[in-house]
Image (cartoon, rainbow over all chains, first blue to last red; front, side, top):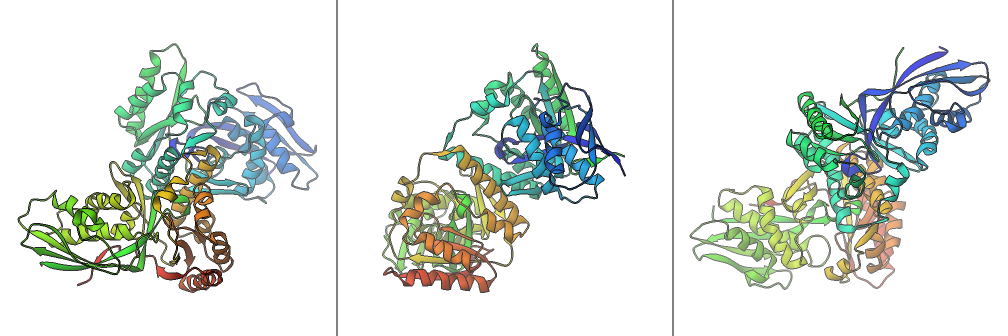
Length: 307
Length: 307
């Protein structure tokens, strides 16, 4: 096999109480990529569709992670990468993570899978760091493993796969505004009240327990963020209106997806997830901000081969 | 049935990364109590053995929780309480919690169990508050439910029962020094670094996952406390020596039990738990501080009727 086509999914990081460590994987939203073994050594990005991204591998997220892996193997051939980008960069649903994961996953398939998924994520961290200026894996891990993932630590990298209740759906609205990741980081305080931190880890531990036991009521009561949301929600117009509207139609909870501007919501069952879409749409239809909304099952497989 | 004898177990609260919300229940260490229905209305503490505690119900932890429950029921009789106290007050293994839970559990049994365990814990919180000056349930919950418990919230009270791997043992050393709870509280900062809080909830979520999956390696890697231990460990002589010694003989982890001075350790298997006892003993034998050490299985049943 000299060529492989893969689907690299979008992801939601942070998930309310799981700031910086939890993420989950979306099912129907993601990028397609083609990875090809070629005689010419090195990493060559030969085609990009969807968004205007650099062709120079060292300036491209998918290229940087590919180079990190390429430098760790000893081969007398190279790789071409084609990127068919559907996830808008800066939308807050793991656009750069999908690129970073896609190239290394595809290359690994073509050379007989010498690396496991955690090792591949290590390479992908290098690509992600190009986009977000810091090494983190809270979008990479769910894109690579699927389902819910907890990044216990970055160094050494340890990723835990948390069970996902089978009837869990996500609805995600992407308001077409720009939030710079640097701004979303800068707005966060360096210190937080110990009492709030305790509330946050009580909720986070409860969410992990709720996911293990498929306790939707507990998932609902745990999807609270007392640390980050009070700050970052200021950057997203109508955030609290959206949140209130989705809870009213039965969502389990809602929060900022990654560093925004997308807002995610989780629901039990497709029917409620669709109602959540309507509720989100009603809020943003009254504004002059363009938006799009995805309804998707939780993707428990993660990145996959298409051909 | 007019009289009941119960065993109310000692407990470990906080459990490293689970400050203020997690606890677990000990098997062979605890108080005995006798609760008796009598004609004379009210709550009457008629016998106390082991330690010098007040007989006036309003000044006694077991009495205060009993009164809270007594005021919520409409009966034309009263209760006598005998306390055979084995858990030294102030040792950091839930002495007051055992008393607070014991009286209401016993009374509930005698009147046909009108209250569930969460409701009983609500009454017990009133007794615990007498001892610790604040309403918390991180010792009460494991004493009442057994195993590991996560107190998700106090108001409303929500207690989650976390699975306990079957081969998990605790070793607890109690150095005979006094640490005032007020001092242990006062030493804590009001604010903590966001980065440390993130580390703490990553560990806490990982510990909950590790308990669900009986992943002893993960439990080991998760039993880290970057928030409270740096402060409170200063109050416990030779704390870091004990911790290092128990890890060297194979313990999964160690930490301050409650607000100290007891130090708990968790191990896979009785054999390692016994080695941990030896290691703890060696450290403290070199000092002039008296101490005692308990080795116990995790008690998955909690408080129980003895007759």
